[in-house]
Image 1 (tube, rainbow, N blue to C red):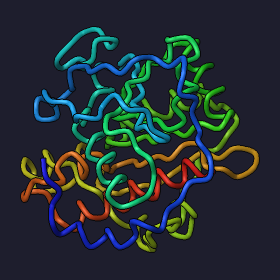
Image 2 (cartoon, helix red, strand yellow):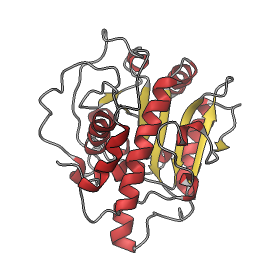
Image 3 (cartoon, helix red, strand yellow):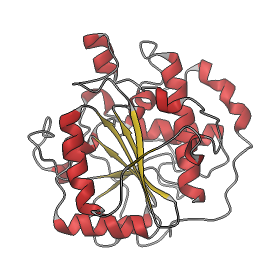
Length: 284
C-alpha cells in the first residue's frame, strides 16, 4: 500500500522530531500477534519484512470486551478479535506507523501491538494505546483498575471512531468508572497536543469523517454525531492522559489514506494529528 503523494509535502518536518528517552522496556512483553479485524477492508494478510524488530515507539491497540448491544459483527469472543476494539485494525495502525517513520525521526515499529489488559502487567510495556469504538466497551472491574493505574503511571490513551449520543453514554459510563472524580474537558485549539509539531489552529472545528457515512449518507458522521468534539482527561500535573476524538474517525483517515474516495484534506489532517498525538504522548 503506497502513500498518497499529496501527503508528501509534510516530509519537510521529518527532521523536526527527536526523542530523548525510551518509554517501554524491550523485555517481558507479550509477543506480536494478529487478530481478525472488525472490518473486512481492514484485514491485512502480509507482514512488513521488519515486523519483528523492536523499536522505541509502538502503536498499541487496546483490546476490550464489548457491550451496549454492539461489537460482535465478525466474532463473539473479544479475545479473538473481530469485535469492536478491532475497528480500523490493523490497516489504520500500520498506516500510522508508516507515516511516523516517514515524517519524524521516531524509531517506530512497523506493526501494531494488540494489548489485552488481562495479560498481567503487559499493558505497562506499551505507553501508547488506541481504543476504537470506545462507546461500546464493557470493562470489567479488574480492567478498570488496570487502566486507571496505567494512565496515572504515564500511559496515554487515544479514544476514537465513535459517533452519536448513545455512543457517548457508553463511553462516558466506562470512563467514569476509570476516573470517577476527574472531569472530561473540552480541548481548545491552543492545547499543546494540537501544535507540538504541526500547528493545527482550527482542528477543534474540524470533523474527520467516517468513510462509510460519506458514501452511504453523504455526510461524515454516523447517528446524530454531526458536531465534532475534542475532549480529554488530565492528571494532577496537567498532562493529557486521555485524548477523546468524539464524533470523529481519525483512524479512518489513516486506514483510507491511499483511497482517492477519501477527502484529501481530511486524510492530511489525520496524518498531522497522528504525528502530534504520538509526539505528545512520548514527550509528556
